[in-house]
Length: 396
Image (cartoon, rainbow, N blue to C red; front, side, top):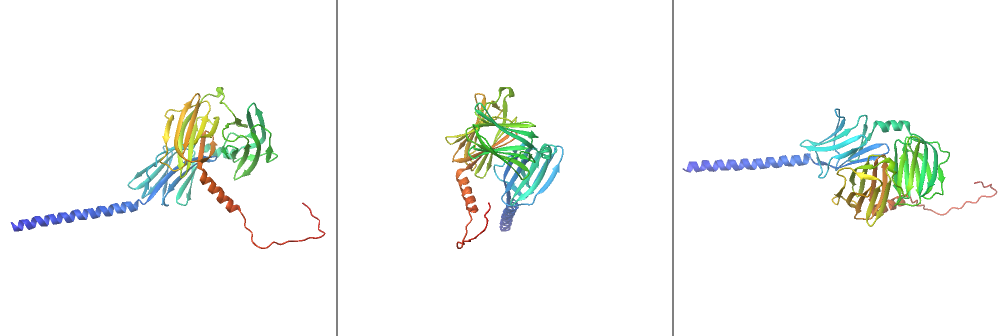
């Protein structure tokens, strides 16, 4: 009996040591997995500019990655071994040459699959811990090869509307417009273009436009348009091959052009900066942007929302100045309201049929302005020196 009891205790002792060993092994494995997945992808941001689209992949630390080019359908795949996805990262709707961006995670790491249209090219640049992938479509490559040629400029008033008329060649390709300075400045860029105008500065006495400055830099023509009215006014860009008309004032969408469809209303957080991205089915919507009672109100004239886009988006979980976005129909127009939780500086950026409204906290802008002013100040030390010249002819 005693021998049997000893045998029973020995078995239990062995079983206890086995369980303890398994716990140690599991702990070590979990620790290894945790350390192996130490790096994480924190953000995916897709933005458009005049030359194409850019996808910024934000990471908490740089990791080695692999690139795969796949066909049927055409797509670019980025593989990040031993990496995890931060909570909240979701697939991103495409734009231009990008159909979609789909991130997935498994035991080996993270895979980001980017669907591409035919002819789209890409270039990957390492920006510190992040990756920046630049995409250009076949059409934008051809447009850049053509390039806009600006030959004539005119400003005229038609009733309560002021028109800026640009004439030349290829004026309907590869351009973008930025409205800033509280709606008092519009910046028009024509990528790969050149100016044949005899002057670089034109002054006008129109109702809504002060002057236009033209410059060429970094492979583009840039027109800086000074406006009188500021925020609260409507504008419309109507671009054709040989003529572009930019209208300012209390505009209405012409009935004969048909109803514009607002295909998507998206939100893109960028740390403390918020981007509201609106895609329409045409590139010439009449846009009115206004700020009132802690809200940014965007009206698109003679428009309707696509199915599923009349909704409220609660974005309080993201840092930045916006807490809620409402999109709904009002009469024959579409209204999009961004409700703010702090005072913001607003700019809008239009590329073709994509309009991006950016809201940056006012205190952030003030700090950047102060830093820029401090950097520009020159401090001189020493004693005053005087020079006296006699019998010298002074010219200019």
